[in-house]
Image 1 (tube, rainbow, N blue to C red):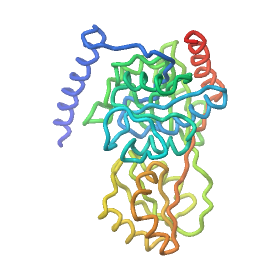
Image 2 (image 1 turned 90 degrees about the vertical axis):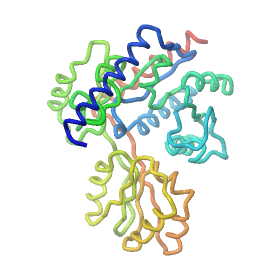
Image 3 (image 1 turned 180 degrees about the vertical axis):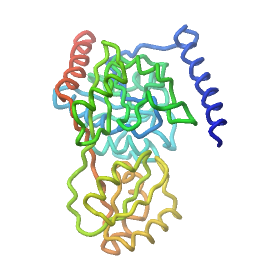
Length: 339
């Protein structure tokens, strides 16, 4: 697609998105307040901002402070429909890869999927009546529900103010929607980010006084495997992961697929043949959920090779306590009102 055509299509797309928001703003499309405390973790770009690690961080934060959270998402690319609460029989096909990752990481926390966030929250309340808060994963574009607290994520190397609407850029929503967030977290910041770098971003974003700005990065688990890995992933932006891996394994090679890619038998054959030239296969936690249901693990084991996931975590470069306090104050105040 030529640049001129991309700009024209982006303009049409932006107009359509603007019309949709106008209809909601003037109550021609209905928007319902959540019936319990809700936290939206989202962005206005397509993928690559660290929503799942942030969701995991917030689950840990809430559980550590005595709250009972649940996580509700759409369940992207699942093969089911309607509301599903994850149980011991849940799979990637029934709830999606990201939800499956969360369910495995926090088996004691209710994880559910539903196309309608309004219906999903109501169903969670019916089935888990002692919930304190629901974390809505990737729900900024779901105007049908009005969340109580919204965390907007934007990547350090691609701030939403520097981006363009699809397909010219990666924005799926208007930059002005950032004004609906309570907290803005600049994610995937470099380890050596300086206070002056943060001030530059702060000045460029020009956030209103009611919004709080935080800076965070991604940390990976220590690399303890010996040999050289084939790095296998189907995520929006594998560059961050590959940069880290190359620091420890200079001869590692990347085999990348599209985000949420469903690995076919032909894909597994290609991966297996390529993996023969490496000592082990390194993948993401999200990809591991999809790969568990394929023959790859067994085929690698037959060759005395392993499929290893590289866990990632959110780390804050601005005071972590400030972000935690914002989240916990919202939940505490609204939980008291509700109960």
